[in-house]
Image (cartoon, rainbow, N blue to C red):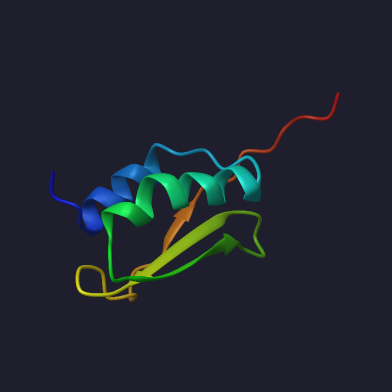
Amino acid sequence: MNYDLAWLQNWADLQRYVDSGSMSWKVISEVIPNFPNHAVDVGPTLEGNYQITLTGPVIDGTQVIVYAAVRKEAK
């Protein structure tokens, strides 16, 4: 498998951000192992989405991947 920006964008497109804790765990367990030697910046945005930025030998940090927000409905 080729782990590059296209792979990361495809991975992000398949995700649904529900909460920061769950999304952070998915990034730690599913993304970071595929991009060794990269600095990682992840977290929620002010707009209510979630973003990831990687900087290293494969991804240079100029591309920010933003997940669409999915809110849980109040019961």
